[in-house]
Length: 282
Image (cartoon, rainbow, N blue to C red; front, side, top):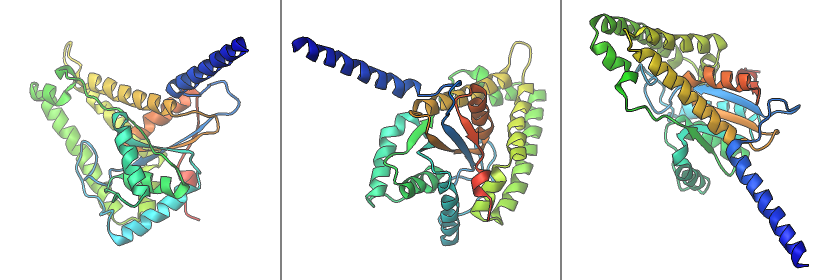
């Protein structure tokens, strides 16, 4: 009898170990006949003006009409039927974010303007989810060789090129932001997630590779960090995948859409879907 109890204890410990490991490495298999589904919703930052590089006009997401439009977007996303919702908040803030979400469910927390709250929290509650998942990572190296702005400041020709490049980006963003202001929230997200726009925005980053001289590769170093950041975000998404039946919605700044989709497709771990499938109007 004692031997039987010891055997059961060992099996139980092994099972718990397997669960613990799975929680870290994720349940994904590039050769599996059934794969979890991943959908990345590219977003602009609802609580900020423009993106991380260019500042531009945006909508007042808290205005009553915009809140009504946001509800329409959430109803569209609900059709994807996600089992998990991942947001652009650092993994180290997961416990803090979970507490805020629980307070929101209890009516004790007022949503902020950012998309993690306005879309992530609201959709998660609409679906009856008990948790939202933080998957961001964004630690920038304390190494000046990655800082293309400081590099350009030391090289007049490079500084001139960077200014011209940023001015071109700024003009594009300003023109698009003016167009966005006249669109409903749903139409904005349809525009942001168009494949041609995603490709265009991603190609802009490659202008920075030209910021180099001799053995200094500030632009290339920055781009390698950018790719590495998105690879780590993707690794965090894998960690929360615990079933081939998972349907994971990732709500992220639109600049990440290209790489997150690319990594998901190239890895073979997920079936990748476009949000346009669910956002199109009837």
